[in-house]
Image (tube, helix red, strand yellow):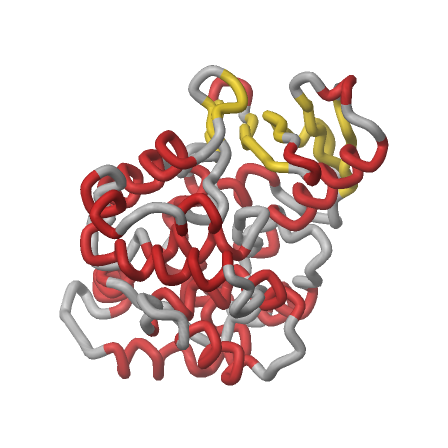
Length: 300
């Protein structure tokens, strides 16, 4: 079964898929031969589905649902809603594109439809994955996320697993997360986050629709153990807030090479450099340090 999803003018499917590393972490998977993004998604009522997404026309996405003929209209609407959320199709980037056009160094961004950052269907998955990127190589991040899905997710199709729910992670021990997931020092943070959500101590999903000023939302995100300035800044980007840079070692190195001929500087110098871009500075920063990705169809 195929579902069609309308997209905004200028939307670029592959540039959104490859906006950052989430596309290479399960339950996402890029099928390069067919230029499709595969995703295992959970639906209400305990159902799950494997979907494949591509952009056959400028104005729409096509979503192929494995076994979708058994899904009713409500579940199909649920799939479309998740796809729209993952690709940020209902967010207005017109102000960002107007700003980008006013800076010669960023006029390429609206021309190719860059700027939308792929995210997971849930804030919980985004937060867990962000914690798994802290103070480690990308290879270890991949190991942790693969282990989370394979060992705590639900197998929907052969070798395809859902992302685990908070309740499932919460049932385990710190020792299990350290040994079997290889989460290391992150284990107690993942456990506390999952247990708090399982107990309904707070509602992370509400962050996507929060009316809080960005600085207050930033403080709320930072209040979760294991989330420092880097992780909080990047989580905010996935919530549609771009007031913080979210600097890590890779971004520092990119900035040094692009703007300082390889010379190291402080984070304050980096922050001051992007201050001119106002509330969009975090997105301008990310476009700047990843510009070389957009010269290749599949940058990684």
